[in-house]
Image 1 (tube, rainbow, N blue to C red):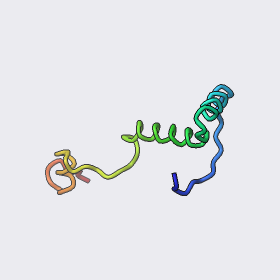
Image 2 (image 1 turned 30 degrees about the vertical axis):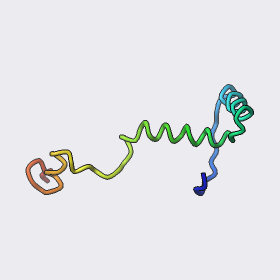
Image 3 (image 1 turned 90 degrees about the vertical axis):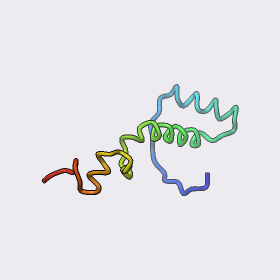
Length: 74
């Protein structure tokens, strides 16, 4: 992973720490890599809650985008 990284502090349980260290000792993959992978999994799982570009395939959204029927009035 060659992208720039930002330093942050996280707090994990002693059990999580022990298991991550054991995983590292068996795989030689840094603990930070596993933590980043876990964050990526959470972000993907909750992707629908994050802002993003609206799809115009939804008829209601397409109508709103065109200013037609279904557009918000205000």
